[in-house]
Length: 285
Image (cartoon, rainbow, N blue to C red):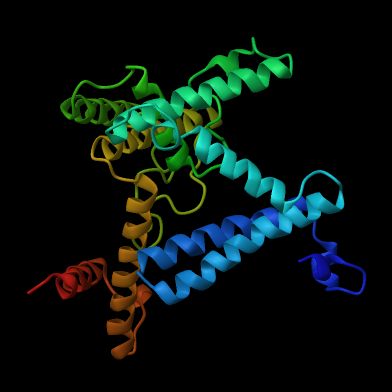
């Protein structure tokens, strides 16, 4: 990496900055997830290498600026692993995963308090919040999962799953109420084109659009909490559904192409029949 960035190295690598590399970091992380979902171990080997390259790239650029080196990154990680696992490297007792997580969060809070105290910012409202440290840059489903998990750890949670389904029903009713304010012919809630609901930008006020967005966001948040109660990763669940939809829809397209047609040339009833057939193709005998 040092040679690639040095004079006489690779022109592209030499031009990169912390900001220009950020999109590649996200891309490589998602490719790692895809390889895991596909259980493609050979591909995963390469994707993990690509993800590691991002760490090396940032570390090399930081080293050139005299900020830190890859050794500093590894030393800090090693120290963190030891400090955050006193039940392994020390005398603290933690026999269950729940106890480990409680200790982990308590240690993180102490570290943050100490760090902010050193920086003279220990009384910041955000610094004292149990939600501090949840990045707003991560995917929204993941952020919602982490925010609700943090809140749940201090007791702000539904006592049982039934309450979540009641909340989902409540949010559905609220969305339906807001939809009553949508003017006829606006394009909201009715198919626009062949089976594409809400295609284009519906003609509604910015205020109503904001309220609809708010209600839909509330529904997503409840669904994320349902996933959390079931110990499921909502991001992974939706990603798998996306793959399933893509696989089935492409199967439909192939059947139509066999007859010399495209989805646009098929009726909605025919598309629905093909969809059901695509589902049956995947069901175990």
